Length: 622
Image (cartoon, rainbow, N blue to C red; front, side, top):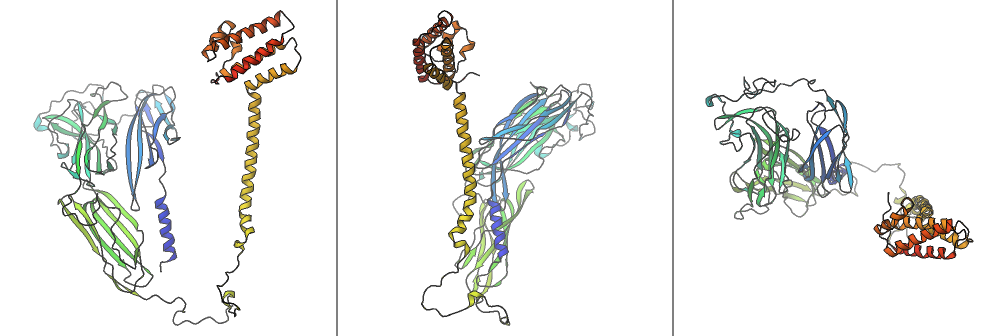
């Protein structure tokens, strides 16, 4: 029987493995202290789990003292292998180049992106700008006795031209060797290994190099286009290297540096594009349109031909994508157990290539394999993917006798041999004895004397035969469940009443403050009260409130000669606008010349407000 702690551990591991990945947002500066006029790069990295909304709409908040160039956005896919599961995430890397001529500390950020319907940002950073020429100069690392590319070691003199003889140039490493330079100043080069067609799941090693002819340079930023048809796994934790190497191209001296080293695993067949890699060269001999951008160069587009392994000779159970060279071993413990108990099988798969995340299992009656626990160590091996995965299985056996467990076997495609192979690990035999009778006490033990008898063990004769009535529990009573549910319901009801009361009060307050309601109230007062000398002013006030409520027009601040054009512009019919001006003129005349206003003015105001009410409300002016 499986131990309780083992079952609990497996359940916890399953819950942890099933927990979704959370979105991650971070930002960093390439340097925290720079001189005035010196560019600095801000990099924002955001990722979200596969299936969720990809990060979008990057935004950077800056003070006016900082000049910004960008953003430059690079899409990316990340693959994490944890507990035998492949977790994919999508994200972006956003780069801004900043520069300031103002000495002091500047608040940079926050930088943020949209994740679904919410905006998530990284904490703001601080950039300190000091006067030009105050920071110490860091000498360039040299790989030969005399730096002909910068003979004055970064001094004020201009670099001189190369005058080395071809035979004095050092031997070029094989990975940096180029026959002809595609650009006379600087260029990027992308290499792939292997160079021929691939099969689905066969790792492809992609390396990017930068070459410069005009002296010492540095790379401001590197960006690569999205590769949705590949799993991208970096083969170097720090692919960028500041040490430049001197190489010979067409007998001329150049500087070269490795930028990235990545393994790409194709996910489907066809002509798949590797995208382009873009980098910016920064140096005195590399002119650029903008000092914040640098001299941009890109790799030419490149495609690879990906096919499926041949159907001829394909072994049963082969899974598309299992490509590499693998060895499989297994250990079984214990070899002798009772029926209903469990044993442990530890299988170790190691080698190079795209290691599978699960193994085919031998199935037979009475043998149940539970989900495995996976431990792994994947790391580059001579520029190739490699490592091992260890699968620990708990196997429950419900049969007796001598059982042959069979063997673990993994069919895979070996790209080096261009043939199918099968990695096999025999499991051997186990001896299963009958299960112990749980109702009998173990041999050599006796029932304790003097112990109190359990109430449920008292036996008494029954008058009628039938099923035994279950013991009565407090949790079975209706009032017990009512006591559990009633307090939360009362709290929710009280909160609902408080919320309803607040909404009703808010609705009454809005109704009192609504200009249209006030306009109608003014006319109701005119209809109820006797006509007096202030009725003309009340009619004008009601008209102004109605115009503000329906057309969003503050008519009090507009001259009378411009009011007609403003009403028509806000959507009022010409006849209605003319009638409103006529009524306003009549009210003005009645208020100044005739103290006794006529009742027809009140009826005309009612008619005009009714026509205004039928118009479509416009946005209120701010």
